[in-house]
Length: 491
Picture: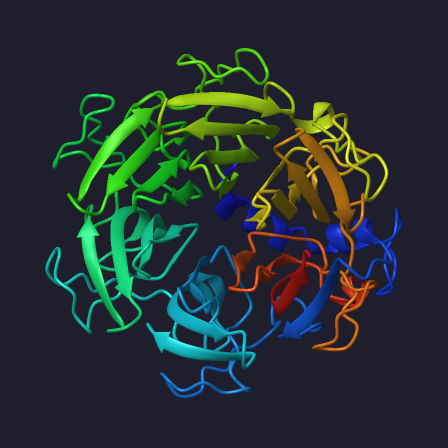
């Protein structure tokens, strides 16, 4: 499979085919219906539920720094997201619509306040495709700002600061490509700091790995898109996988399986595991449920990540470049070992893809497993259960050799290694059921989508914003860049 930037172009050119393939009406498509449950309900909070193709969900920036009920980010996908210490939700960039309703790579920073249900435009430009302003390495400044970009990695640290790494976007010279810059944003001062990496795009340069397991000032990952990240309780930032130029120095694409750790205290990177400069590495699975120093997930991008209360890093699915995974892994930073937990021991591609084993909605089973997918959304609840929503992948029917867009919601219980299909459809390409804005309902469900932004608020509720997929009337509008905000109450 090509990287996402190429898929978006393909989807744009294939709109007519997609509309005919979806079928159905705005009331919901074929497949099992969402459950009538008072405990698990979606609420449409802000944004649009219907518009026309590729002109959907125009932004309203308002006045910078001033919250308003009228404000809303434009439709977008592949934005970065964080939750701060106050439970407010933050959004940066992505591929979407600017104030001129022009699609491009954005560098606008937004804050959403759940208590008031209002957006605030905080930083960055209201125009797409902006160059980065780096300033002096390690020095915060009000004029600093990352360039417009998509598919970055985002973390929030224990001090409440927001961190951003790489992606596909614009450097200090206005050149577009893979970035390996690391940024820190302080919500109190509203200032960005360029912390590590280069201020220019990384063509085919090779990363500086150093010795595996040894931190060094010169170490730095290559420029990546669609890598996966975690922030641990010690304040370290973790980075896994992604795609970039391949390790031969050519201009071909390569997928990677390196695990990196960044220590903000020393500003040093450590290469922890993986194939180093060698791209497109197969996974070493070992025995299911048994950790081993030899184990490592295969190269991939667009995986979902979680971190649990014991500090273990969890990883699900993603795109290998030739197919989609549905494997679930965890990594123990103390032992330095990966464990394959569930799913297939490799990717499935085309007509041999990995369909979802849904079982009965609401019933957990060790035989259940989500289908292979990339660019899904994930959360972890207060009980330590892992949650997975949507993405681009395979439904229960394997009806498309290239995958479909999903709106299924899953819960995984690490204590019994069982997946449970909780909400949404087991058939892909479904429209949303929005209901009344601000009113939860057991009938509500977001439309299928991938590359959405997601958060957990201070009350433990799950939030999801935008992405690329279906609104409530795909028979009329077809595929679109969304700007709808949803809340899900897991308890």
